[in-house]
Length: 430
Image (tube, rainbow, N blue to C red; front, side):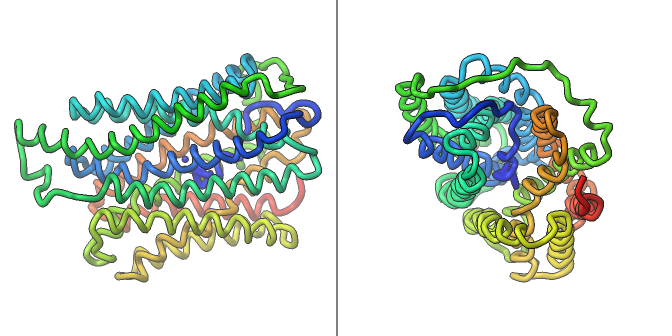
């Protein structure tokens, strides 16, 4: 999810057409910043949930990656309907709808835990992600409209910083709540009633985390509802159905859409494997909780890189910067796969820094000179975020077939290679 974004960065996508002059709603920028923080953090929490469910249900990597598959499939399924919903009921009511959907997803973890059923956890994650998509549909255009156009870029950058703060904090806290207090016995050692009891007890920690989030989301939704009529000057154009896919025939845009798909997939794949990777004896040999806390470094790198990248992109060609960052990610993957100890572990975590500028740079390069078709293009790129469903699942298959996480990293490396080539391809203005 970056995202970003990274899963967090993926929140730059905007399937709603931005319309008209700035909206008159003083004081609501803070509310939008809070939305960025919430959906960024919840998306990155998947990286903590995956190793927990993998152990409790004795899953292989393919089965564990179904967490990301179900979560990011929501972008493909809900993206365009979510945009239509927000256009129909407005930004503030749309935000309430998204927050309540997220709350419902969190509450569905309760029956999933009581029955200790993996499929119910996956369904809960899909519902949760559906709410995240709707909230993103609201937040991206709204932050750009809450003020003059001349400062829209700085507001968006600042909002993305809040997203990155969420992706940094949530995995650390989540690792303490969800991965802490591990029992001395493993699910693989149990069977029958004892296994069911162990899974029910183990999943209770997940319920505790998401139950707390449900309460927080309900409070935020209630606050937003109180100000549902506060926006002045809001307007939307009529939806144009599923139009816009003809843009994929344009080489620059089609190549860029592919790279959005590959980038989100690569970023999510690496993030999802961090805990399992760092637990390996030849890497850092950490327990689940200690490894989970280090996920924050991956997302912190993206946050730092975003600020540094915004300055670098002012003086360097965006296509060249993108190619350099992608090449850097490939180099770090190669170093991690061919070394041991802390060098291997921290090389993997450093990929977050390389990821930082990728989504917004790919996005803007792909949409250059689309003119009146910019909204259509943005909608297609939002659907392309579903790469976060496909690539991680495929990476899990490679890990299971090869028996090696290092070999599985080959797939993200291939994704970054395509991104590097797009940077070279798009280095000249459209």
